Amino acid sequence: MKLSTKGRYGVRAMFDLVLHQGDGPIPLRSIAERQDISEHYLEQLIAVLRKAGIVNSVRGAHGGYLLAKDPQEITIGDIIRSLEGPIAPADCVSDELKDECGNSPDCVVKMIWKKVKDSIDEVLDSITLEDLRQEAINAQQKGNRHGYMYHI
Amino acid sequence: MKLSTKGRYGVRAMFDLVLHQGDGPIPLRSIAERQDISEHYLEQLIAVLRKAGIVNSVRGAHGGYLLAKDPQEITIGDIIRSLEGPIAPADCVSDELKDECGNSPDCVVKMIWKKVKDSIDEVLDSITLEDLRQEAINAQQKGNRHGYMYHI
DNA sequence: TACAATACCAAGAAGAAAACTCGGGATTAA
DNA sequence: TTAATCCCGAGTTTTCTTCTTGGTATTGTA
Image 1 (spheres, each protein chain N blue to C red):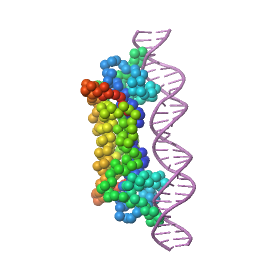
Image 2: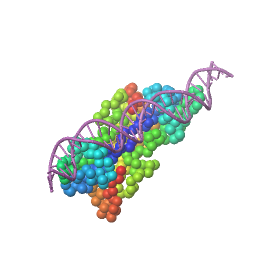
Image 3: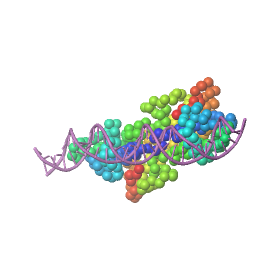
Image 4: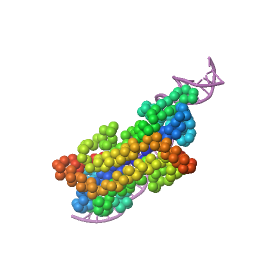
C-alpha cells in the first residue's frame, strides 16, 4: 500500500511548480535539482501530467512548465491518478480495470476494498495545490524555515 | 496503491476461517481450494499470521488452523499490517520505517501522506472478522447466494 | 506400530514492475 | 547560429512479487 515514486515525485514536482507560480515557465532541470529527482525520469512523469492537462509546456530557450489550471482546481487526486492509475487496493473496485472475480455487488470482502478506496479518494480529492501553497506560506510565516521543504 | 496478494489472500483466508468457525481446525488445503490460492504460498502467509497471534495451528492428522482470538477482536487492519507491513503511502509516515527525509513535522507534502495513512487505518481498524461474518450471514439470508463469495 | 494427513521450514526461480538511463531530435529566445 | 529547453522511444538494472520445490516434524487412527 505504498505509492510508487511516480505519485510521490509527481506531487512534489507540482508542489514545486505552484510555489514558483508567476515566475514564468519553470525548467524541468530546476525542479529536478530542487527536488533531487533524476531529470530524465521526472521528464517521463511530467509528460504524463501534460497529457492529462495538468501542466502546459513552453518549448525552446527560457521554456519550461506551467500549471495548466488555477491551483485550486488541481487536486492531489488528479496528480496521483494520472501517474499511478486508479487508486484501488484491489482490481475489483477499480474504475478502469475489469476484475476477473464474479463482481457480486454484495461480496463481503469487496466491500472492504470499496471503503478503503473511497476514503483515500476523499482525502486526495479534498486537497488542492492551492491548499499546499497556503500551508507552505503559513509555515514560512511562523518562522519555520523548513515548513515548505520538499519531502518524500 | 494496490495491495499485494499477501494482504488480499490473507483477508480472504481469514474470512474463510471465520465462516468455518466451530468446525474444529480447518486444514490449509481446504482453505486454499475454496479460495483458489496456491497452497504452498498460502502456507507462507498463514505462517506470518500465526506468528502475529492471529491464528493458532494444530499439527498432525485432523489438524489445521483456528482463529486465535474472538472474531470481534481481529480487525482487517491487524491482518493486512501483519502481512504487508505498515500501511503508509510514503515511508516518512510509516511507524516502523525510518525515512531519510528531513522529517520536519510541518512538511506540507508529508501532511498529505499522513492524512491518507490515517484514513486507511481508520477504515481497516473499524472492520472486524465478526463484522464480515455478520454481513455474510445477512447477505445469505436475503437469499443472495453470492453474498459470501470470496472475491479478490 | 504403520501410515496417512496434516503443519512447518528454507531456498530458489520465474516473471513483472519500478526506477531509472541513454541517445538522440525538435523548438525557440537571444 | 547557438544554447537552452522540451520531446520521444528504447534499453537496463534492480527490486519485488508470486509462486514452486523438496523436504522434515507431528499426530490421530486403523
